[in-house]
Length: 285
Image 1 (spheres, rainbow, N blue to C red):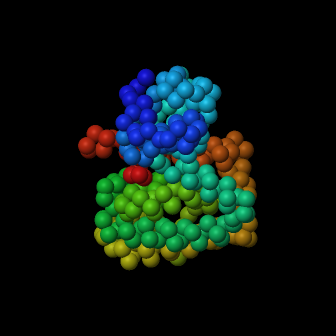
Image 2 (image 1 turned 135 degrees about the vertical axis):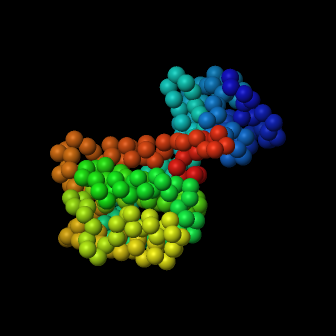
Image 3 (image 1 turned 90 degrees about the vertical axis):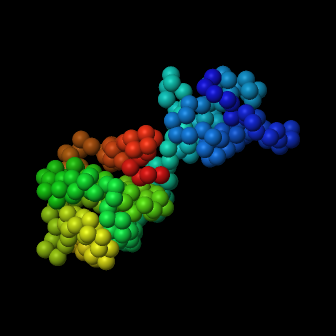
């Protein structure tokens, strides 16, 4: 067993207030949310939890799977269960299901992007793009000068995700992460060269670096407005349907939307070591 069990140091509840499985689930969630167990912490093993709560290992597995579905822990075969750092992927999955069920169109996602990315760019400019300015510059070049449409789409998602870090607003970061699959789907279009009236990512970045929030917002709007022409008559079609067609054309059927989202998310969730030696995601949440 790794460390104290989830019930260690907790005030006993009256008998019968919870069944044993619900109590186990409550205690684990409480330890995580109180940050008694921090990201990377290994939970006690199935046998230890089963003994402590007088339940079967099948009940323990069911509880752990339920908590994993909330994005609070990650279960690794043969290694155990570990506390996850929140990254918004569970929220993204739930929202994607909801929007797909309701037939969200390219126009719907476009409107959400204008509201969210414009404000994020302005807030990032207020802080001069710190601490991710260099990485933003590399991504802007990859997007504006690259010729691989799939790599450009993933770089585009990473660019706007890092702007959320520079904006230092975890709520906006979580909101952007929630629509990230749809942002990615929108960028999987045939042609990515900016229109004459549009703005390049390096221009947006220049405004952010100059701490010109008004220009950053204006250029973000101009950039997004210029992308309308790439969708022709598809602007009012379901976004996942349009994305699937574009992806088949780009990859020859080799990639699925799930493959691309997994790949993009795995890069977004890649962790870096901060100056104080702790681990954090690029979203900073």
